[in-house]
Image (tube, rainbow, N blue to C red; front, side):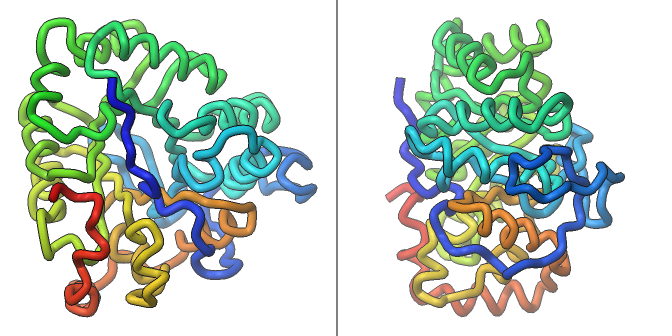
Length: 324
């Protein structure tokens, strides 16, 4: 069983995006746990909400990733407040995975601290890196226990890279049998796939099974080599599959090089995806990153093309997670 090695996959551990921008999404009552502020009452979906493919779930352009401070071990005091602040600000989609160290434990603790109803306010996504039925079911039950919930809104086949993995997943006693069983008994509501290595694998996976979502890499370096936008995203749109973006900042390298601003990168990715997941390292980053929900979407095509041209000369530095 290979655990994914997508370090920085949600661009965690970087500076926040925009400064304090007023949130537009509903808030969840978390009391003083998120820093003593009194949250607003839950509200209807914000103007920026869009459907996550055929799941019918309403998501906003920016969501909470499962990495950043959440992909650590033994840092509950720093990690749990990050989730609580995201809940307070009305985050709609939350990402995590068994491979992300104690990320799932932090979420479970945060949901308990936030109080009754907090878990139900979000579309909760986790993953399995097991390719066999029994291994996947063991990971699922462990995820549910650690998250403190009886179901996942989305269970994703994590970090698909090789055809042989698809053959195992969709073969006899493969992980797809776990998906079918878990959907039938209510432990899982929707199924997705994830990957940032080879777009052809994700396209093939969509052709083999009617998944509900795909999580893939989206940033302005993408068109230069092994593009996901003209393959995976295009295939997903044709099939009504929800699109979730990651690697938005290329693990922070686009920001480090001052190749683009964070707001540009989020607008670019969220112009192609239903939502983008961004890892956070502090409560301040949560406020700043979720503030990006108030940006203007989509980014106009001419602006997207100009950003791609600006990044293209060093695109190889920003796609190191793709197949060699």
